Image 1 (cartoon, one colour):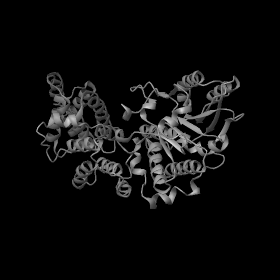
Image 2: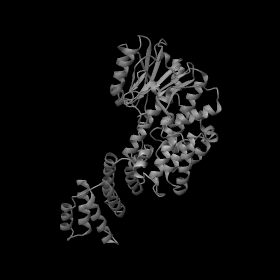
Image 3: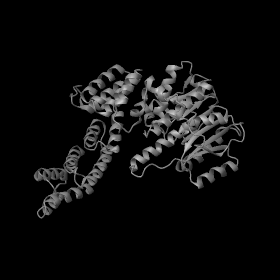
Image 4: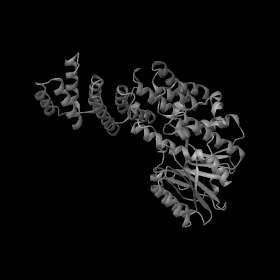
Length: 490
Protein backbone atom coordinates (compact mmCIF):
# COMPACT_ATOMS: atom_id res chain seq x y z
CA UNK A 1 0.00 0.00 0.00
CA UNK A 2 1.44 3.37 -0.97
CA UNK A 3 1.72 5.36 2.28
CA UNK A 4 4.08 8.36 2.36
CA UNK A 5 3.21 9.07 6.02
CA UNK A 6 2.64 5.64 7.61
CA UNK A 7 2.94 6.80 11.22
CA UNK A 8 0.26 9.47 10.71
CA UNK A 9 -2.10 6.86 9.32
CA UNK A 10 -1.33 4.44 12.15
CA UNK A 11 -2.03 7.14 14.73
CA UNK A 12 -5.29 8.00 12.97
CA UNK A 13 -6.36 4.35 13.08
CA UNK A 14 -5.41 4.02 16.74
CA UNK A 15 -7.43 7.11 17.66
CA UNK A 16 -10.49 5.83 15.84
CA UNK A 17 -10.10 2.36 17.34
CA UNK A 18 -10.03 3.85 20.84
CA UNK A 19 -13.27 5.73 20.30
CA UNK A 20 -15.55 3.55 18.16
CA UNK A 21 -18.55 1.98 19.87
CA UNK A 22 -19.49 -0.22 16.93
CA UNK A 23 -18.14 -3.77 16.76
CA UNK A 24 -18.16 -3.98 12.95
CA UNK A 25 -16.24 -0.71 12.65
CA UNK A 26 -13.87 -1.93 15.36
CA UNK A 27 -13.08 -5.06 13.35
CA UNK A 28 -12.56 -3.01 10.19
CA UNK A 29 -10.18 -0.58 11.93
CA UNK A 30 -8.30 -3.48 13.52
CA UNK A 31 -7.86 -5.10 10.11
CA UNK A 32 -6.63 -1.83 8.63
CA UNK A 33 -4.17 -1.39 11.49
CA UNK A 34 -2.80 -4.88 10.94
CA UNK A 35 -2.46 -4.06 7.24
CA UNK A 36 -0.53 -0.87 8.05
CA UNK A 37 1.85 -2.73 10.38
CA UNK A 38 2.45 -6.08 8.65
CA UNK A 39 4.02 -8.72 10.83
CA UNK A 40 4.07 -6.65 14.02
CA UNK A 41 0.65 -5.10 13.83
CA UNK A 42 -1.51 -8.02 14.90
CA UNK A 43 -0.77 -7.97 18.62
CA UNK A 44 -0.98 -4.17 19.07
CA UNK A 45 -4.24 -4.12 17.11
CA UNK A 46 -5.83 -6.92 19.11
CA UNK A 47 -4.53 -5.44 22.34
CA UNK A 48 -6.09 -2.10 21.44
CA UNK A 49 -9.41 -3.78 20.68
CA UNK A 50 -9.37 -5.23 24.19
CA UNK A 51 -8.33 -2.06 26.01
CA UNK A 52 -10.20 0.60 24.11
CA UNK A 53 -13.43 0.04 26.10
CA UNK A 54 -14.21 2.97 28.33
CA UNK A 55 -15.92 6.31 28.05
CA UNK A 56 -17.05 6.26 24.44
CA UNK A 57 -19.11 9.04 22.89
CA UNK A 58 -20.11 10.17 19.43
CA UNK A 59 -18.32 13.49 19.90
CA UNK A 60 -15.00 11.61 19.73
CA UNK A 61 -16.05 8.74 17.48
CA UNK A 62 -17.32 10.88 14.60
CA UNK A 63 -14.18 13.01 14.04
CA UNK A 64 -11.97 9.94 14.53
CA UNK A 65 -13.76 7.85 11.90
CA UNK A 66 -13.99 10.84 9.54
CA UNK A 67 -10.21 11.24 9.83
CA UNK A 68 -9.70 7.56 8.94
CA UNK A 69 -12.03 7.91 5.96
CA UNK A 70 -10.11 10.94 4.70
CA UNK A 71 -6.75 9.20 5.09
CA UNK A 72 -7.94 6.07 3.28
CA UNK A 73 -10.26 7.72 0.75
CA UNK A 74 -8.18 6.73 -2.27
CA UNK A 75 -7.63 3.12 -1.21
CA UNK A 76 -9.72 0.00 -1.74
CA UNK A 77 -11.00 0.42 1.81
CA UNK A 78 -13.11 3.47 0.90
CA UNK A 79 -16.40 1.55 0.29
CA UNK A 80 -16.14 -0.21 3.66
CA UNK A 81 -15.32 2.99 5.51
CA UNK A 82 -18.16 4.79 3.73
CA UNK A 83 -20.53 2.07 4.95
CA UNK A 84 -19.17 2.53 8.49
CA UNK A 85 -19.83 6.28 8.26
CA UNK A 86 -23.36 5.57 7.02
CA UNK A 87 -23.96 3.44 10.11
CA UNK A 88 -22.50 6.20 12.26
CA UNK A 89 -24.91 8.66 10.67
CA UNK A 90 -27.83 6.51 11.78
CA UNK A 91 -26.55 6.35 15.36
CA UNK A 92 -25.87 10.07 15.44
CA UNK A 93 -29.41 10.80 14.31
CA UNK A 94 -30.85 8.48 16.98
CA UNK A 95 -28.60 9.37 19.90
CA UNK A 96 -28.00 13.12 19.57
CA UNK A 97 -30.19 16.20 19.47
CA UNK A 98 -29.98 19.84 18.54
CA UNK A 99 -26.68 21.53 17.85
CA UNK A 100 -24.51 18.55 18.77
CA UNK A 101 -26.28 16.37 16.21
CA UNK A 102 -25.97 18.99 13.47
CA UNK A 103 -22.28 19.59 14.16
CA UNK A 104 -21.45 15.89 14.03
CA UNK A 105 -23.40 15.30 10.82
CA UNK A 106 -21.71 18.40 9.34
CA UNK A 107 -18.37 16.62 9.86
CA UNK A 108 -19.55 13.48 8.10
CA UNK A 109 -21.12 15.42 5.21
CA UNK A 110 -17.91 17.45 4.76
CA UNK A 111 -16.00 14.18 4.32
CA UNK A 112 -18.65 12.62 2.04
CA UNK A 113 -20.35 15.55 0.26
CA UNK A 114 -21.88 13.23 -2.36
CA UNK A 115 -23.58 10.99 0.20
CA UNK A 116 -27.33 11.50 -0.21
CA UNK A 117 -27.93 10.13 3.28
CA UNK A 118 -25.53 12.60 4.93
CA UNK A 119 -26.91 15.39 2.77
CA UNK A 120 -30.53 14.58 3.61
CA UNK A 121 -29.93 14.10 7.33
CA UNK A 122 -28.07 17.39 7.66
CA UNK A 123 -30.74 19.23 5.71
CA UNK A 124 -33.42 17.79 8.00
CA UNK A 125 -31.44 18.81 11.09
CA UNK A 126 -31.16 22.38 9.83
CA UNK A 127 -34.84 22.55 8.97
CA UNK A 128 -35.77 21.17 12.40
CA UNK A 129 -33.63 23.79 14.17
CA UNK A 130 -34.99 25.15 17.44
CA UNK A 131 -34.07 28.27 19.39
CA UNK A 132 -34.09 26.26 22.64
CA UNK A 133 -30.99 24.41 21.45
CA UNK A 134 -29.16 27.74 21.14
CA UNK A 135 -30.30 28.89 24.56
CA UNK A 136 -29.02 25.72 26.21
CA UNK A 137 -25.66 25.87 24.44
CA UNK A 138 -25.10 29.63 24.68
CA UNK A 139 -27.10 30.96 27.66
CA UNK A 140 -25.26 34.27 27.41
CA UNK A 141 -26.36 34.58 23.74
CA UNK A 142 -22.73 34.89 22.62
CA UNK A 143 -22.65 32.64 19.58
CA UNK A 144 -19.15 32.18 18.08
CA UNK A 145 -18.83 33.56 14.58
CA UNK A 146 -17.62 30.25 13.17
CA UNK A 147 -20.47 28.12 14.58
CA UNK A 148 -22.37 27.65 11.33
CA UNK A 149 -25.01 25.30 12.78
CA UNK A 150 -25.83 27.70 15.63
CA UNK A 151 -26.32 30.65 13.28
CA UNK A 152 -28.50 28.55 10.99
CA UNK A 153 -30.59 27.58 14.03
CA UNK A 154 -30.99 31.27 14.89
CA UNK A 155 -32.10 32.08 11.34
CA UNK A 156 -34.71 29.33 11.36
CA UNK A 157 -36.05 30.42 14.76
CA UNK A 158 -36.39 33.96 13.41
CA UNK A 159 -38.13 32.75 10.24
CA UNK A 160 -40.71 30.76 12.20
CA UNK A 161 -41.36 33.78 14.41
CA UNK A 162 -42.21 35.86 11.35
CA UNK A 163 -39.00 37.91 11.64
CA UNK A 164 -38.16 37.64 7.96
CA UNK A 165 -35.73 40.56 7.90
CA UNK A 166 -33.78 39.09 10.83
CA UNK A 167 -33.61 35.66 9.19
CA UNK A 168 -32.60 37.15 5.86
CA UNK A 169 -29.90 39.24 7.52
CA UNK A 170 -28.33 36.26 9.30
CA UNK A 171 -28.42 34.08 6.19
CA UNK A 172 -27.02 36.83 3.97
CA UNK A 173 -23.98 37.04 6.25
CA UNK A 174 -23.61 33.25 6.24
CA UNK A 175 -23.93 33.23 2.45
CA UNK A 176 -21.07 35.72 2.18
CA UNK A 177 -18.92 33.56 4.46
CA UNK A 178 -19.90 30.22 2.87
CA UNK A 179 -20.85 31.07 -0.75
CA UNK A 180 -20.76 27.46 -1.92
CA UNK A 181 -22.75 25.91 0.91
CA UNK A 182 -26.03 24.59 -0.62
CA UNK A 183 -27.85 24.52 2.72
CA UNK A 184 -27.18 28.21 3.34
CA UNK A 185 -28.26 28.98 -0.22
CA UNK A 186 -31.55 27.14 0.10
CA UNK A 187 -32.36 28.58 3.52
CA UNK A 188 -31.62 32.11 2.31
CA UNK A 189 -33.93 31.58 -0.66
CA UNK A 190 -36.62 30.28 1.72
CA UNK A 191 -36.31 33.47 3.77
CA UNK A 192 -36.58 35.59 0.63
CA UNK A 193 -39.75 33.73 -0.42
CA UNK A 194 -41.26 34.23 3.02
CA UNK A 195 -40.76 37.95 2.44
CA UNK A 196 -42.26 37.78 -1.07
CA UNK A 197 -39.03 38.37 -3.02
CA UNK A 198 -39.39 35.71 -5.71
CA UNK A 199 -36.88 37.26 -8.11
CA UNK A 200 -34.04 37.18 -5.56
CA UNK A 201 -34.94 33.64 -4.49
CA UNK A 202 -34.95 32.52 -8.12
CA UNK A 203 -31.45 33.96 -8.62
CA UNK A 204 -30.17 31.91 -5.67
CA UNK A 205 -31.88 28.72 -6.80
CA UNK A 206 -30.24 29.08 -10.20
CA UNK A 207 -26.80 29.09 -8.56
CA UNK A 208 -27.34 25.87 -6.61
CA UNK A 209 -25.08 23.04 -7.63
CA UNK A 210 -26.31 20.63 -10.29
CA UNK A 211 -26.09 17.68 -7.91
CA UNK A 212 -28.35 19.38 -5.37
CA UNK A 213 -30.92 16.67 -4.79
CA UNK A 214 -33.80 18.61 -3.26
CA UNK A 215 -36.31 20.24 -5.59
CA UNK A 216 -35.68 23.79 -4.41
CA UNK A 217 -32.66 23.86 -6.70
CA UNK A 218 -34.82 22.84 -9.66
CA UNK A 219 -37.63 25.40 -9.40
CA UNK A 220 -37.68 28.73 -11.21
CA UNK A 221 -39.76 31.51 -9.68
CA UNK A 222 -39.03 34.67 -11.66
CA UNK A 223 -41.45 35.59 -14.42
CA UNK A 224 -39.00 35.30 -17.30
CA UNK A 225 -38.08 31.71 -16.40
CA UNK A 226 -41.61 30.70 -15.56
CA UNK A 227 -43.01 31.86 -18.89
CA UNK A 228 -40.40 29.90 -20.86
CA UNK A 229 -41.96 26.59 -19.81
CA UNK A 230 -45.17 27.01 -17.85
CA UNK A 231 -47.21 28.08 -20.85
CA UNK A 232 -45.53 25.89 -23.47
CA UNK A 233 -47.71 23.16 -25.02
CA UNK A 234 -44.59 21.14 -25.90
CA UNK A 235 -44.77 19.64 -22.38
CA UNK A 236 -48.34 18.37 -22.72
CA UNK A 237 -48.82 14.64 -22.24
CA UNK A 238 -49.05 12.51 -25.40
CA UNK A 239 -52.54 10.99 -25.91
CA UNK A 240 -51.35 7.43 -25.24
CA UNK A 241 -49.60 8.16 -21.93
CA UNK A 242 -52.57 7.27 -19.69
CA UNK A 243 -54.76 4.24 -20.35
CA UNK A 244 -58.25 3.69 -18.93
CA UNK A 245 -58.71 0.50 -16.92
CA UNK A 246 -62.22 1.28 -15.65
CA UNK A 247 -64.07 4.20 -17.25
CA UNK A 248 -66.79 6.24 -15.54
CA UNK A 249 -70.16 4.64 -16.23
CA UNK A 250 -72.09 7.80 -15.41
CA UNK A 251 -71.68 11.23 -13.86
CA UNK A 252 -74.02 10.63 -10.96
CA UNK A 253 -71.39 10.78 -8.19
CA UNK A 254 -71.69 13.86 -6.01
CA UNK A 255 -67.99 13.82 -5.14
CA UNK A 256 -65.05 12.34 -7.05
CA UNK A 257 -61.78 11.68 -5.22
CA UNK A 258 -58.48 11.03 -7.03
CA UNK A 259 -55.45 9.12 -5.71
CA UNK A 260 -52.17 7.96 -7.28
CA UNK A 261 -50.61 4.66 -6.17
CA UNK A 262 -48.32 1.80 -7.06
CA UNK A 263 -49.07 -1.86 -6.26
CA UNK A 264 -47.77 -1.66 -2.68
CA UNK A 265 -49.71 1.47 -1.72
CA UNK A 266 -52.86 0.17 -3.40
CA UNK A 267 -52.82 -3.00 -1.32
CA UNK A 268 -51.83 -1.22 1.87
CA UNK A 269 -54.20 1.76 1.92
CA UNK A 270 -57.01 1.27 -0.60
CA UNK A 271 -59.25 -1.04 1.49
CA UNK A 272 -59.34 1.37 4.46
CA UNK A 273 -59.93 4.40 2.22
CA UNK A 274 -62.84 2.68 0.43
CA UNK A 275 -64.37 1.61 3.75
CA UNK A 276 -64.19 5.15 5.13
CA UNK A 277 -65.81 6.66 2.01
CA UNK A 278 -68.61 4.08 2.13
CA UNK A 279 -69.30 4.91 5.80
CA UNK A 280 -69.37 8.70 5.31
CA UNK A 281 -71.30 9.06 2.02
CA UNK A 282 -74.65 7.66 0.92
CA UNK A 283 -74.82 5.26 -2.06
CA UNK A 284 -74.20 7.18 -5.27
CA UNK A 285 -72.66 10.07 -3.34
CA UNK A 286 -69.01 9.34 -4.12
CA UNK A 287 -66.58 7.79 -6.58
CA UNK A 288 -62.86 7.04 -6.22
CA UNK A 289 -60.52 7.40 -9.19
CA UNK A 290 -57.34 5.34 -8.84
CA UNK A 291 -54.32 6.20 -10.97
CA UNK A 292 -52.04 3.13 -11.03
CA UNK A 293 -48.36 3.42 -11.90
CA UNK A 294 -46.67 0.28 -13.27
CA UNK A 295 -49.30 -2.13 -11.91
CA UNK A 296 -48.81 -5.89 -12.12
CA UNK A 297 -51.62 -7.97 -13.55
CA UNK A 298 -52.78 -9.11 -10.09
CA UNK A 299 -53.40 -5.51 -9.02
CA UNK A 300 -55.19 -4.71 -12.26
CA UNK A 301 -57.43 -7.76 -11.83
CA UNK A 302 -58.14 -6.83 -8.21
CA UNK A 303 -59.24 -3.29 -9.16
CA UNK A 304 -61.44 -4.59 -11.99
CA UNK A 305 -62.96 -7.13 -9.58
CA UNK A 306 -63.81 -4.37 -7.07
CA UNK A 307 -65.50 -2.42 -9.84
CA UNK A 308 -67.49 -5.45 -10.98
CA UNK A 309 -68.63 -6.11 -7.41
CA UNK A 310 -70.23 -2.66 -7.27
CA UNK A 311 -67.52 -0.52 -5.67
CA UNK A 312 -67.84 3.00 -7.16
CA UNK A 313 -64.36 3.35 -8.58
CA UNK A 314 -62.63 4.08 -11.88
CA UNK A 315 -58.98 3.66 -12.78
CA UNK A 316 -56.28 4.78 -15.19
CA UNK A 317 -52.84 3.23 -15.59
CA UNK A 318 -49.47 4.24 -16.95
CA UNK A 319 -46.15 2.49 -17.32
CA UNK A 320 -42.89 4.28 -16.60
CA UNK A 321 -39.67 2.79 -17.96
CA UNK A 322 -37.07 1.91 -15.29
CA UNK A 323 -34.12 4.19 -14.88
CA UNK A 324 -30.60 3.35 -16.07
CA UNK A 325 -28.93 0.44 -14.29
CA UNK A 326 -26.07 2.62 -13.02
CA UNK A 327 -28.45 4.70 -10.92
CA UNK A 328 -27.80 4.03 -7.22
CA UNK A 329 -30.42 2.22 -5.15
CA UNK A 330 -30.98 5.32 -3.00
CA UNK A 331 -31.35 7.57 -6.02
CA UNK A 332 -33.72 5.09 -7.69
CA UNK A 333 -35.96 5.10 -4.61
CA UNK A 334 -36.02 8.90 -4.60
CA UNK A 335 -36.96 9.00 -8.28
CA UNK A 336 -39.64 6.32 -7.95
CA UNK A 337 -41.33 8.03 -5.02
CA UNK A 338 -41.01 11.39 -6.74
CA UNK A 339 -42.95 10.14 -9.74
CA UNK A 340 -45.64 8.40 -7.68
CA UNK A 341 -46.33 11.71 -5.93
CA UNK A 342 -46.35 13.72 -9.18
CA UNK A 343 -48.33 11.40 -11.47
CA UNK A 344 -51.78 12.27 -10.09
CA UNK A 345 -51.21 15.92 -11.04
CA UNK A 346 -50.03 14.99 -14.52
CA UNK A 347 -53.28 13.10 -15.19
CA UNK A 348 -55.49 15.70 -13.45
CA UNK A 349 -56.28 17.91 -16.51
CA UNK A 350 -57.49 14.90 -18.46
CA UNK A 351 -59.63 13.71 -15.53
CA UNK A 352 -61.28 17.11 -15.14
CA UNK A 353 -62.31 16.98 -18.80
CA UNK A 354 -63.43 13.33 -18.58
CA UNK A 355 -65.50 13.66 -15.42
CA UNK A 356 -66.77 17.17 -16.23
CA UNK A 357 -67.19 17.92 -12.53
CA UNK A 358 -65.05 19.18 -9.63
CA UNK A 359 -62.42 16.81 -8.25
CA UNK A 360 -60.74 16.25 -4.90
CA UNK A 361 -57.14 14.97 -5.03
CA UNK A 362 -56.12 13.19 -1.83
CA UNK A 363 -53.32 10.98 -0.53
CA UNK A 364 -53.95 7.25 -0.64
CA UNK A 365 -53.39 7.00 3.11
CA UNK A 366 -56.32 9.31 3.87
CA UNK A 367 -59.49 8.31 5.71
CA UNK A 368 -62.77 10.20 5.17
CA UNK A 369 -64.29 11.42 8.47
CA UNK A 370 -67.30 13.47 7.27
CA UNK A 371 -68.74 14.68 3.95
CA UNK A 372 -66.91 17.53 2.22
CA UNK A 373 -70.16 19.34 1.34
CA UNK A 374 -69.39 22.26 3.68
CA UNK A 375 -65.57 22.10 3.74
CA UNK A 376 -64.95 24.93 1.26
CA UNK A 377 -67.51 27.19 2.90
CA UNK A 378 -65.84 26.53 6.24
CA UNK A 379 -62.52 27.43 4.62
CA UNK A 380 -63.99 30.82 3.70
CA UNK A 381 -64.78 30.47 -0.02
CA UNK A 382 -67.61 28.19 -1.21
CA UNK A 383 -66.76 28.67 -4.90
CA UNK A 384 -62.96 28.83 -5.40
CA UNK A 385 -61.04 27.74 -8.48
CA UNK A 386 -58.85 25.51 -6.31
CA UNK A 387 -58.58 24.68 -2.61
CA UNK A 388 -55.31 23.92 -0.80
CA UNK A 389 -53.98 23.38 2.73
CA UNK A 390 -51.20 25.97 3.30
CA UNK A 391 -48.78 25.43 6.17
CA UNK A 392 -47.80 29.10 6.46
CA UNK A 393 -45.44 29.68 9.38
CA UNK A 394 -45.08 25.92 9.87
CA UNK A 395 -43.36 25.55 6.52
CA UNK A 396 -39.67 24.78 6.89
CA UNK A 397 -38.81 24.90 3.20
CA UNK A 398 -40.22 25.49 -0.27
CA UNK A 399 -41.68 21.98 -0.56
CA UNK A 400 -43.75 22.48 2.61
CA UNK A 401 -45.62 25.70 1.92
CA UNK A 402 -48.54 23.62 0.66
CA UNK A 403 -49.68 20.29 2.10
CA UNK A 404 -51.08 18.38 -0.86
CA UNK A 405 -52.68 15.55 1.10
CA UNK A 406 -56.02 17.24 0.28
CA UNK A 407 -56.73 19.67 -2.56
CA UNK A 408 -59.81 20.74 -4.56
CA UNK A 409 -60.26 21.64 -8.27
CA UNK A 410 -63.33 23.23 -9.82
CA UNK A 411 -64.36 22.84 -13.45
CA UNK A 412 -63.77 26.50 -14.33
CA UNK A 413 -61.61 27.34 -17.37
CA UNK A 414 -59.10 29.01 -15.04
CA UNK A 415 -58.73 25.75 -13.11
CA UNK A 416 -58.14 23.81 -16.30
CA UNK A 417 -55.40 26.30 -17.25
CA UNK A 418 -53.84 25.94 -13.82
CA UNK A 419 -53.80 22.13 -13.82
CA UNK A 420 -52.50 22.00 -17.39
CA UNK A 421 -49.71 24.43 -16.47
CA UNK A 422 -48.83 22.38 -13.39
CA UNK A 423 -48.67 19.16 -15.43
CA UNK A 424 -46.52 20.85 -18.08
CA UNK A 425 -44.02 22.08 -15.51
CA UNK A 426 -43.76 18.67 -13.85
CA UNK A 427 -43.25 17.04 -17.25
CA UNK A 428 -40.61 19.61 -18.13
CA UNK A 429 -38.64 18.97 -14.94
CA UNK A 430 -38.81 15.19 -15.24
CA UNK A 431 -37.85 15.30 -18.92
CA UNK A 432 -34.77 17.30 -17.91
CA UNK A 433 -33.88 14.55 -15.38
CA UNK A 434 -34.77 16.73 -12.41
CA UNK A 435 -35.97 14.57 -9.54
CA UNK A 436 -36.37 15.09 -5.82
CA UNK A 437 -38.73 14.18 -3.02
CA UNK A 438 -41.26 16.99 -2.64
CA UNK A 439 -41.11 17.95 -6.32
CA UNK A 440 -44.92 17.88 -6.58
CA UNK A 441 -45.39 20.33 -3.70
CA UNK A 442 -42.53 22.58 -4.76
CA UNK A 443 -43.74 22.79 -8.35
CA UNK A 444 -47.31 23.39 -7.16
CA UNK A 445 -46.10 26.31 -5.03
CA UNK A 446 -44.15 27.86 -7.92
CA UNK A 447 -47.05 27.59 -10.38
CA UNK A 448 -49.54 28.91 -7.84
CA UNK A 449 -47.28 31.86 -6.98
CA UNK A 450 -47.04 32.71 -10.68
CA UNK A 451 -50.82 32.41 -11.18
CA UNK A 452 -51.58 34.63 -8.21
CA UNK A 453 -49.13 37.29 -9.44
CA UNK A 454 -50.52 37.34 -12.99
CA UNK A 455 -54.16 36.36 -12.47
CA UNK A 456 -55.44 38.33 -9.45
CA UNK A 457 -58.94 36.98 -10.06
CA UNK A 458 -57.74 33.39 -9.54
CA UNK A 459 -59.59 32.32 -6.40
CA UNK A 460 -57.83 30.03 -3.94
CA UNK A 461 -59.55 28.64 -0.84
CA UNK A 462 -56.96 28.14 1.90
CA UNK A 463 -58.18 25.20 3.96
CA UNK A 464 -57.14 25.44 7.64
CA UNK A 465 -54.91 22.63 8.90
CA UNK A 466 -57.50 21.99 11.62
CA UNK A 467 -59.83 20.58 8.96
CA UNK A 468 -57.36 17.77 8.18
CA UNK A 469 -55.92 15.43 10.82
CA UNK A 470 -52.52 13.87 10.59
CA UNK A 471 -51.27 10.97 12.68
CA UNK A 472 -50.22 13.27 15.53
CA UNK A 473 -52.75 16.12 15.48
CA UNK A 474 -56.43 15.30 15.94
CA UNK A 475 -59.25 17.81 15.44
CA UNK A 476 -62.92 17.25 16.21
CA UNK A 477 -63.92 19.21 13.07
CA UNK A 478 -61.60 17.40 10.63
CA UNK A 479 -62.93 16.11 7.30
CA UNK A 480 -60.00 13.75 6.62
CA UNK A 481 -57.37 11.93 8.61
CA UNK A 482 -53.92 11.06 7.32
CA UNK A 483 -52.45 7.77 8.47
CA UNK A 484 -48.93 8.98 7.68
CA UNK A 485 -49.03 12.76 7.83
CA UNK A 486 -46.34 15.37 7.27
CA UNK A 487 -43.38 16.07 9.52
CA UNK A 488 -44.09 19.75 9.26
CA UNK A 489 -47.52 19.20 10.74
CA UNK A 490 -46.15 17.87 14.04
